[in-house]
Image 1 (cartoon, rainbow, N blue to C red):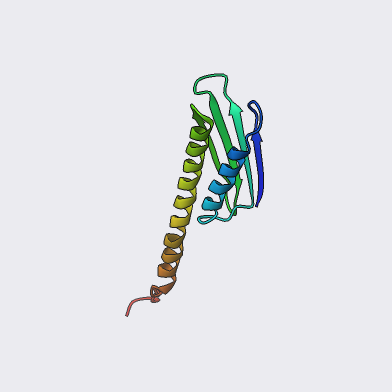
Image 2 (cartoon, helix red, strand yellow):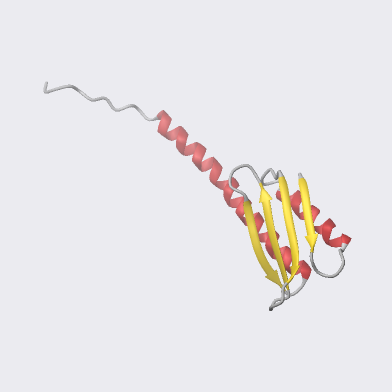
Length: 116
């Protein structure tokens, strides 16, 4: 997995980068991540911090755009949103496969040609 983490407020904090990589490792238990693009911004409005997250995964990509009063709160909300999206996608998959199996195993309808 390729990680791109940008901190566009003040100076970079290595503890935040370690937190991001730890959270991404937990997300990889739910879904395979090819690349992650995380941007931490200083928001001019209120709440002061904003996180934009984009995960490149098989299928449609996962995205989150969250705000918070602290850097950790904004990151936590973004990762919570991404985890929820990953869980929903993971839990939908067995239902799709099970439904497909039910359709294949039902008896085929036959059409009789004419009156007896």
